[in-house]
Image 1 (cartoon, each protein chain N blue to C red):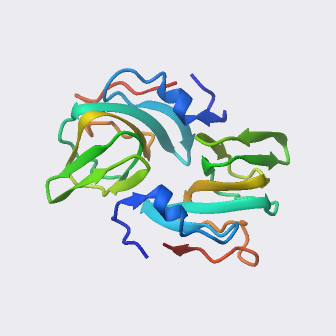
Image 2 (cartoon, rainbow over the protein chains, first blue to last red):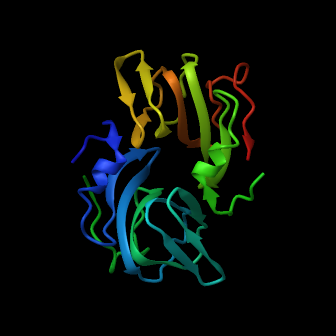
Length: 121
Length: 121
């Protein structure tokens, strides 16, 4: 685990993220976590009722499907904010590396029963 | 100005950031702004008393000098959180592109009298 105040090399940290859809925490600020996630295939539909969620694509591409609005396709270098309360599901054709920012208390599926354990790396 | 809910291409947006040390806002989430800044030379010493500040280096490198602890050198892909209350100054030998994240109310110098105007692009 890195100390919260270390310099974080995002590309190097991604080398240690092997499991799919298992975000790893790399930094904390103002009660939010910066997380790195490797995605492939479809994640579950879920909603974060109380918080926006930031997606920044580090490598690859991802399609963010949303129940109440058109999907958005994100390529490397693209940033998108899924608004609080909007049910969404990331779908990844190949494999992608995602930087996520959300409150430290946020579970990746929005539900404690299904959320993957989130740990610091 | 981009709508807050657009997809933001960070590399493309940087093409529109020409002025030095003049952060441009590209996204908002949970009351925070994601800003893009072009840096070269020395910025002023300043402190954000109430908020941590996230630096993510998009291109180039930057040295973050801090009054009460050793400097940190950040290269492209590096992320660092300057803790609230720590007086700091970015110093850039060549030119760099920085992604910054901080509360929407934060002024870049921490002081209204000297802060550059911050606008959406």
